[in-house]
Image 1 (spheres, rainbow, N blue to C red):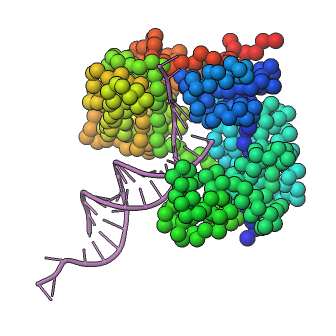
Image 2: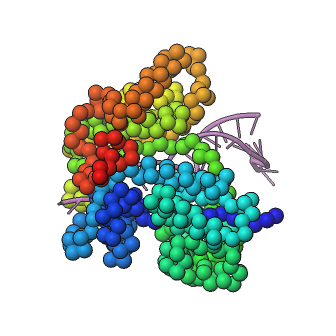
Image 3: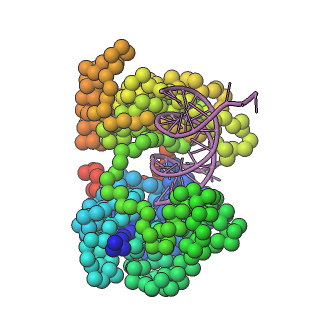
Length: 427
DNA sequence: TCTGGGGTCCTAGGACCC
DNA sequence: TCTGGGGTCCTAGGACCC
């Protein structure tokens, strides 16, 4: 059997690069993008990385640095990033019939059957064309397994000599091992904080050492996923390309509030909004949910005030994606766990036991009526269509509230250049 | 003052079945 | 004396990812 060939295309500093697409003045300026509520750093330009700013670092710790280096600061503009991501993925799909969209800024292409004789050249073509057509800088890494692609991706970002493209399939086994020796074990895809600490206790510190570890021993302590990583490092492909996106088995909507919530009224309003958002996602993938979990918590960073966290799971009498129904049950769950006297900073809702809408089982004896179900589905389809065309939250339920003073902070938001006519770039 | 959000996979253990 | 063997399904918890 012929060895497989995969390419991983990964956008560099994706959120920062998105901000730069429509704002050329940012090109040479150090720039960061913040998480929800403008709290943590989630994307950094290269010069900011060099200043030692860490992924996930709270921005309040950086006040001096931002002033000193004139760092440009942006709130997360997900409408913009999602749209540019979709352009990028569509553009990449022309380079191979087999594509897996892995995250908002990463895509795999399988190149096994393409019979390319110069893979590095092919990688350069992808990189240059993406830049030309989307304005996004990407790195391309090519290898015989997905795990090795991820390794190549680390190397390509460390060493500018590769100029953004690295093909590991052209290397001899010995050259490959030299590369693996440069990668710390915690940078291997699938090895997180706990596993890397465990492995280093046994003297396994690099990707190369993991490659030559006893796979049976690894399986015992790192389960079958660990064994797969070892085999993938040896060039045996165990993680196939996932072309189809299976429907989600869990849909979650949760946020920290812009300020702490202390009244049940506001909590009900916030929760209703989270349910509405999650229900939209549910309908987007044509699914129904039959289980719902509500959770809330106080801030664990506030050590001086009393802590409380709880969750409540309900099983619904029948699967549904009807927002008013889901809100009704979520509020029942909330009633069971809400306690007066705490300062809540986060809440959310999660749907599980998700089934496709066409697999709906009519209930002979219960309160469920198929006729009612279709009426509800049509109503939601109209609401979703209106919100899609005229902007989200054009139509909402009264309980979702008009002021939403608890909403998250986004003080440094750029324009939604590509998805809102009113915010289109003017020259 | 201030600390993200949304997912997946795997395993162990309990309940239950014939 | 001696109390089976082989399964499935579900959930919680722990690991990981971007």
